[in-house]
Image (cartoon, rainbow, N blue to C red; front, side, top):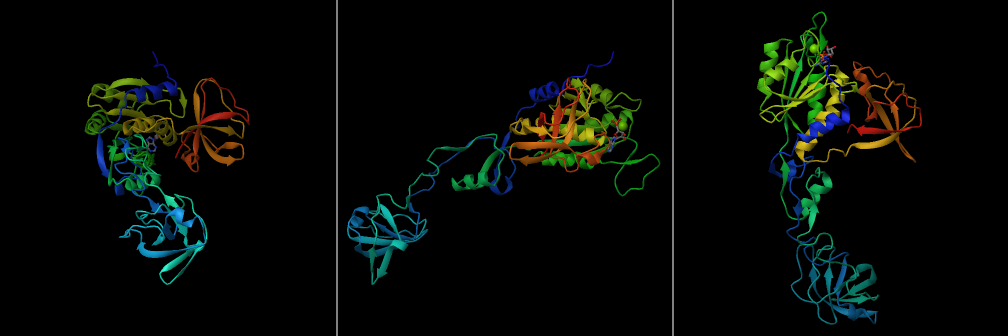
Length: 401
Ligand code: AMP
Ligand code: MG
């Protein structure tokens, strides 16, 4: 009896159910770009750490400027990183730079543009309010405040904020190790002479690139011939990885040995066959070691599409990052011909217009037409039951980046 195809959203759910965040490790900030925060970052210190000047000018007592113009005695200087040694008393001012500590006794700063200096004194031409031109301690971040929640992918702003609260490292989830196995007697590396019937092993380059772009680490890329025992031992070697991605040999042909090998190695199959085009012969299971085992179709587009729709969310879940953050909708600007029966993942280019995102297909959509991935920004997900989609309809998309 043929296996029943399951819906892509159900397949995704079954995968996510089995993927939970890996352990945390401290990562120095310089290495943390793109890593996922495991533990919230709290501020040990407030930012700014002290009241400081927003302007170059003079630190004064606001009350002294009430009857401006007024002449004050300049008694010291406060520079960035070098506070004044004296306090400001009535009738006095202290020369101050932007970011420098507001001296004791002063409650405000007069901008240099509103003053004129001569012989150790300064004439203040304006009245300032208490607190004027002063940045208060804790205005940006209060002491003890949580600044970045767990699950955040660390970008430039996050790294800057973590540094600003005085932390040189961040607790991040370990990057999943992904073992990529390509299968097929016909596969040749680029640069090797092609034997008759041979093809280039493109999956051995596109899939590891997807692994890295997803924030995981490539443990190994291996190619195995269409032979049952070679397939089994190659998969066995991969079992200490967090994720194993096997491309090709997953289907029901005479020379497809992956399903049997997985069963012999005790992999608990969660599904085999998805109602998706491209990507029908896709399987997923879990080995006792905890390794998440993906069997992806060998067709180069199918391998990329199923990786993006199933393996990448699994990597997100292992990283503790949100798994739905790449879902959005876009207006389809051209008709898409389809029959009900399977969901379609359509390679699209996106364009942002006044009324939101618009999508157009990248052209010919055959699962062997790898150039259909070139320039694609998203996969439009056309549901199983849907027939032809008219131009102007809003469709769900999964962003590729
Ligand atoms: P399979 O899933 O093994 O039946 O392969 C389906 C199609 O994808 C066949 O035309 C294979 O030659 C092709 N294919 C399989 N593996 C790769 C690969 N690593 N790179 C490029 N094409 C492949
Ligand atoms: Mg094959």
